[in-house]
Amino acid sequence: MGNPVSIGDSFADFATLLSDPPIPGTAKQIQLYAKLVGGVPKLYLQTSAGPLDITTVIAGALLAANNLSDVPDKPTALVNLGAQPFDSHLFSNIPVGNGGSVIGANYTCVAADAEHMMVSQVNGVVFTIPADAAVPYPFGTALSFCNFNVGTTMSIAINGSGVTDFLFMGGNPTAGTRTLAQMGFATAVRMPFTSPGGYWLISGVGLT
Image (cartoon, rainbow, N blue to C red; front, top):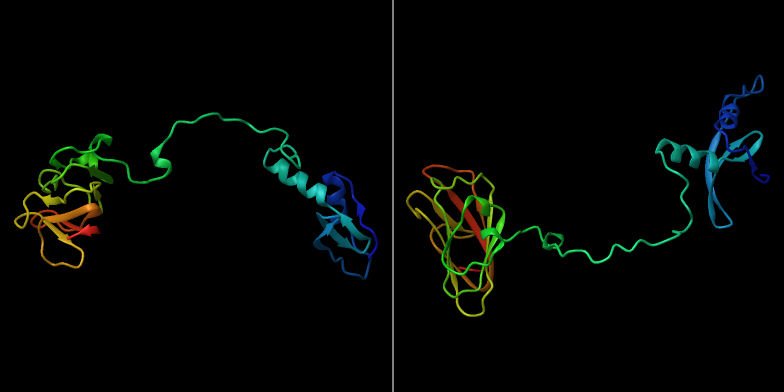
């Protein structure tokens, strides 16, 4: 195979090459292949006339199709964005409930706490899931609870417990109030049942 020759940078040259009629009695065969030349990837069109370098033509077509200009081999400058405000959502998909505030006393969840995490550092706090009649959370809603405390345990209860609404713990068929140990974390998920009220399944670390 001889040295590659250029067909120019125009689409007309490329189109002419592909549309040229074959020699009578022969079949026209065209092959595309790529190889490194001096460490640079190149694309070639192989015909009976020899290998033709079509790298520039193909690159131009891709750039034109996407309304792009040529891309330099190296960036010519770096943009300094400066200091950016901290956003906790960059690191976590669980926003803090209670309007984004740590809870300092017994707390009953509200509709806006759906898909949020209730956090407290106060000894003996009771987190309460409201009855379905009061706050009908959609099926699949998650409420998370964190006892960020090295002192004592906290409780997670549900209004209407054992009568209209039920809080079950994973692996335990008995509904009722749960205890969350120091530095414990648990998530309760609304189950798709409504008779007679709301059903929740909770699991987590330090939960009994």
